[in-house]
Image 1 (cartoon, rainbow, N blue to C red):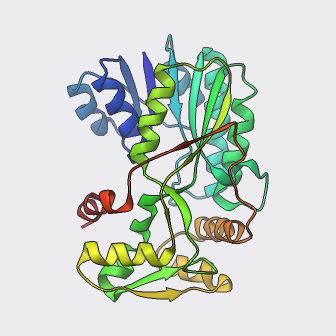
Image 2: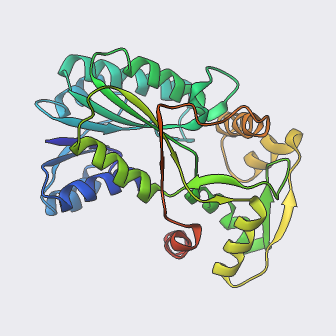
Length: 288
């Protein structure tokens, strides 16, 4: 039996679907009971639990072979950073008490840093907690998600612009599709590693300008690139609808990436093959 957290999200959904397609027994963790029904119809067991509830997660992990988990980015909570730490604490307590043999956890390339890395700060915290619980742990450090292009969709659709938060719009950096991460995570669960490891997950490299051009082609319009200076990041993000603490954490992450401090530091590297052109049609349709 494999347990998958976040089955309602992009990566967890792929992990669960991949395992089910291979005839594996799967138990998905969902917070909303209604979101569990489609999984139940496909033959999965459903555990209804919040990821910050250690006891509920522990029950979901009873007598399982492997567990896929992550830290959700829920900008709607009162204290974004503290909420993620509570989830990390609850996750590790549940894994420790249930003695799960193997955990695959989605993290980020910037998580090797302990501070000054914005959204990756709590990922660093989670990684270190999990690596100390006694289970074998596969840390999957993904670079920027290709799906993050969706953040630009409102401005692209309504104003014909693509905001750039990087110092240069012409420097290419690796990206990876969540479908590639999910499939790799599923393979890690099925083929349990001999020891814990940190895997850097990369993919095709694009500059911000290339992303804007590709999104424009997919939308059937030419998008104007708009540079957002670092001092204005938080203001622009909050005006776009993000809660302030989430915006501050994201702005700090942008600054960290711009500083050049972020690079693969894991035990090995895996490269996804999915391109931005492949995911854009579905991404646009899903956010229409």
